[in-house]
Length: 392
Image (cartoon, rainbow, N blue to C red; front, side, top):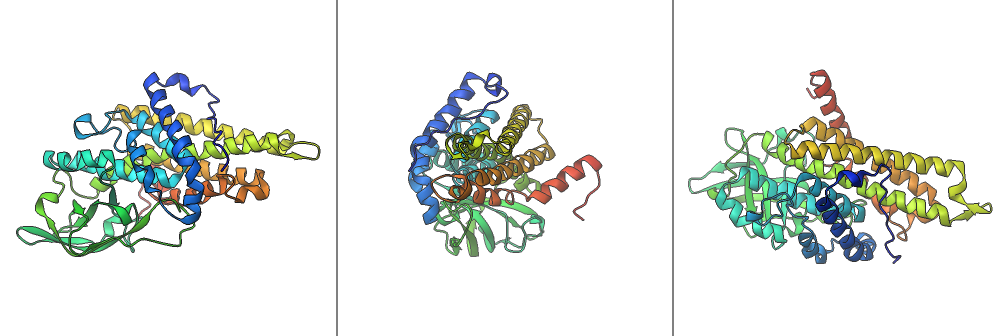
């Protein structure tokens, strides 16, 4: 395994806009990725195995619910800190960042925002330490971009709810201890329920043969007459807006995370361009290669500024769902294009596990689809600027 020589590009001195705390948090995450993720991630991806050994380290760097208040086990950090942590983790691998994003934004966030005090105290501290791992059940086999069409439902049986249905493409599901599941009640209203490992009729088969996110565990959530205690219903918000609020937080993290993947591809290509000799000189000395690198650093810089401003808006509780969609769509698309260009710069070496580029490229093919597809986010922006709904 090659040593991790990553150096983060900062062409516009964006570090000057960060606080000392921001930089300490980011640098701690960066050091952890170099020490604990980089040496093992290529083998994990080749074997299609999630490296569970890194879970305690993710907790230690504050990757699980960094903005959750300290009284519930979180770090009580701001949204820019959350973004920077996601950036550094995805610099290591998108699948590892997916694990952290799900735990933070799709499991801990709804319990914190939509749960009651008893639920917060029961679940959040153990999720923050990684003692419990969570998953988020929204997407179904027949309902992805249209979650309102979900068929998973529950019935009131007096002293419990009876849950039936299935969820698909669920990160962390094969090993999750709890799942925040979205289902319709008998009136068709969407509510969140916390389903726990061990409840009879609840199973989590793993999805195999993935070409993307191979170092992340993906699976299903299947509910066959699962008896869910009534105290496991999240009481403080219902309707489709509840899970969409979670997705806003996750998409925000992705907008930062994708920058990390792009930076890793750029840094790898830049380093290679100075070492690879063809026609008597480093390939970085040729115009077409410089064009690629110049465009990469330009797009990364634009994405950094977009994410930073979005983080400021999030801190002020002013960020809109449409603004988050724009950043997620732009930054993931940017990262995928940079991965593809960087792969070309490395030629045949770019497809091997000697370098991280092909792994990033395959991972980003999932990232550009999940948490709202590339096209759906485009329509969200279109709706926001025109006021005209193209979804119906």
